[in-house]
Image (cartoon, helix red, strand yellow):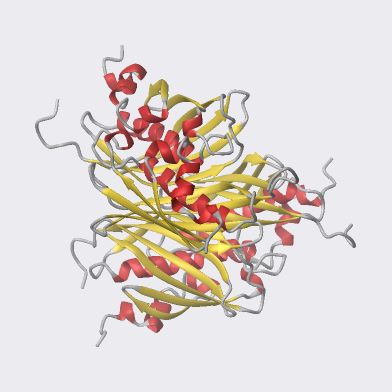
Length: 145
Length: 145
Length: 145
Length: 145
């Protein structure tokens, strides 16, 4: 049904494997125009010295999900920049656990989208809420598919 | 003069080497109570598939500098959590370049601090501005150094 | 059932009538621990010169709803400060129309709460999303009810 | 020297007198392309029931200064929308005092500007820091001056 490789979690994951999401260990679980879900294991190298998931890892995880959500809603070849992002950190996620991020659009406009990502621990406890504004850039004028 | 190892950039870097700042490649240049400076080389693994520094890397870089700045202003053994963070993304930093982050306190209170980090490219162009609120946690009651 | 006057929209409205919410014209519709709803008519004096609801009015409206929501969840006599607030502005609300704000808690902790307010036009169009962190202050030690 | 009425504080104040800035009592002190300064007396009607300047008043005051700063940097007839705004609230300003807001650009781009407003009490104490992203809208195609 979904020939668009942008909707295949494994394809998305392969696409970004050499980049920040791969470095952090983001695992894509669901990729759709109204919901993007990912998981992240809290390994020491993405934690603080205090043994909890680093705030920077949380923001990067969310940014990844929101950006994928935006791209999915654009024409093929479209690109997006995050203009701004704001995060509330609520509870810590200890090393060894897994967190799940669910990104949903608050707004899908012609020039901007706003995505909000909720990150929870496996026990359901809310870790953080991230909302970000994405600017939609025109696809390249030529040469693309 | 500064016996406090928290003020030695190399010591700070060693302390966090096994964690997110080390994974990203954050290099501490200056660590003081009113200014923390770091550098980050834009390697492919912290970039986007578009070849620019990933927004998540930018936020994680800033979060690291602001958290270090907060800890420095606390009693030994004090810890801090980032409560919230907001970022404006302004210009892209291409792969292969270096960015420099300078964090300064906007506010140093008894329970919270607000730090703002300005991230620039080597050519001076502003990439991002991140401001974050840090909650100061009591040091452990006993057993510390 | 609810003797607590803090849960009576008319009583809340009377309480703040001499202050900013009264000046703006905020009308409380529903006041509960998990949902606070208000309305605001877009009058010229809370608009921009362009004839739309002023961004400042939007943020003040949301701040009012979120602060009321926090107070409701605290012991009698408890007070709260907004520590920080972030807003995404999405669509304009023209003069003469009405907007409705619905505030819900994203987090209710012992020391902080996070409330998110969604502001919509009467036609359902999303105008803005505001999320704010409230610090809970101890009630006065004596002399309260 | 400056024929542009947009640079005359009294003219700006007159222009917005019938709107939110007038309702709040914002007084423009200095209006220039790299710095906009205003003052606001903390009257009861822009305060909280606790007798301090309302967070909503603070955000509205800052939004006003940042928007004026953006317009000044645009061609005549240009308009601007605030896309997003984030605020850190730091110290309270009691009723009867005056606060001063100073807005400066962090970024002036072709499509967006980022302005940051610092609000202080007369005694110099920092009350709040607000940073906002402005989208620049094209001036009307015809009929302008």
